[in-house]
Length: 113
Length: 114
Image 1 (cartoon, chains in turn purple, blue):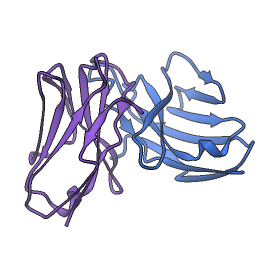
Image 2 (cartoon, chains in turn purple, blue):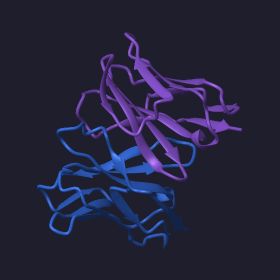
Image 3 (cartoon, chains in turn cyan, yellow):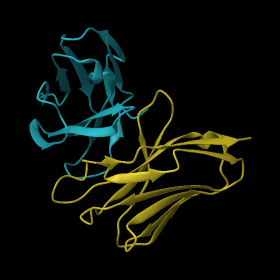
Image 4 (cartoon, helix red, strand yellow):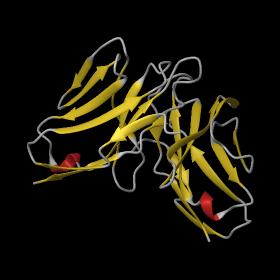
């Protein structure tokens, strides 16, 4: 158990809808990352937050947004969903801002029908 | 464009054998190279990592070999065990951006037969 908690574990929705994925980092970790894992693209970095501030941005679509709250949990919002957004979304956390040692949650599997 | 290329896609090894997974990269700005292990239904977990100032790093049965001039690195699993059966991802990241922005290879599904 990595200590990173993600909810929901599974989510099925329709095209055009909006969903929110939630992540609680390990206790004490200030940095949160979001990754997308799909068969087409593999594991892709989306975005990083550190202590509430956006730190780095990757291949995140404009339809997607994220934020980190004062209690350090993070949410990834996905809107105007398309079939191609079906994927496993991972949250990871780390203690410091600049490290490659990430602790991943078990992921939220999103299916868009 | 895949910044880190990984091979093979799948690997079957007998118990006690050596598993070898290879990765290559183009961006010379990369300076941190971790390997992550992922079991079904779980998130990736850091296995071992190396920086380009060393050519090899060993932790138990797991060894990373790094060839800076060739821009290649590999994972060797000695005395492979059925419990090692998992998907392995190589990755790379660089300073100046954030080390947590990992560029992952496509993964190698390792199966170790008892």
